[in-house]
Length: 360
Ligand code: GTP
Ligand code: 5AD
Ligand code: SF4
Image 1: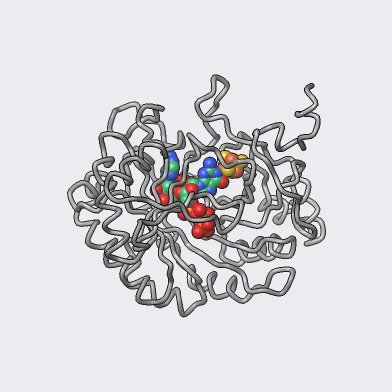
Image 2: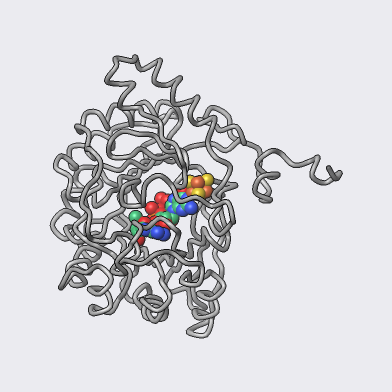
């Protein structure tokens, strides 16, 4: 071991990324990462069949819990230091009882007594009518997945006719309801929607939303029939490519991160109008600062998007464990959180579920 590597903490050694001192009083893994961000899937059903995510042949595969069960789990996590709860799916707006869940979660307070950051990731198809009720229930903000700003390209990706108009109306309704800053997530796939980069920059400037380009990860449902797409490194449009395309469109300025654990690198243009984020888990992994833990729709804890194993929190609850026992169980699981993903490496194994069944 060199003198330099002897100074690294285990996380630095595992990822090569420098780290600051861990926070006190929080759920912490064995690498010293504070886990403050819980993502809860409330259904693995989805009304879209995006080519990079689903084959479109299979529907829901996992159970949904009663809203009261998600709530008990979320309370336990919040009592252990979670500060941000993101509701996801599948498509969470399909879930009956979602507004009740938001209403209850919005009442919770962090261990230091602050309001929770309650966010939702949606495909936006049903958002136009639900934006105001969600805001009224206490939701803080939404992220909408939208992979093209051209209606035809969009429908070719989602495989749902007239989907673009609905999502656009959803985004505008969310902004009007005060669920901003609205983030618009675009997963780029070479040959499908990489033509849209400049148009998305314009969209951000025109609509006042944060557009985030995401590198495609190997989390799709495997496709044998060629209708969906299987991940290849070549299909990933990398951060470097996106930055140089945007620079050619208009000079870019990098913005400082809000937090070390932020997934996106942030940019604006020379006139300060528009905000672009680039989430680059493939070319610039951010695992060294990961603050996330996930709950699947059927009540399993996943410590990493790419976990090979899950932990049956719902099973423990059904067997009558007390809150005290469940808290100890969660702490033990967080302690074993994986160091990082292995995308693109020879030892890479796809996770036990695809993205739509894990939760985005
Ligand atoms: P904020 O709450 O606004 O900070 O958003 P976020 O960055 O957590 O949100 P979002 O749900 O929009 O996530 C953006 C994208 O980043 C997701 O769609 C994933 O593609 C990717 N992503 C989110 N979390 C993880 C993670 O833990 N690991 C990896 N590798 N990718 C992630
Ligand atoms: N790689 C990266 N992002 C993905 N998403 C879905 N599948 C993938 C993938 N394989 C994104 C969606 C949405 C969020 C839930 O996750 O586009 O924005
Ligand atoms: Fe965290 Fe795993 Fe995502 Fe890396 S791949 S950022 S460790 S959840």
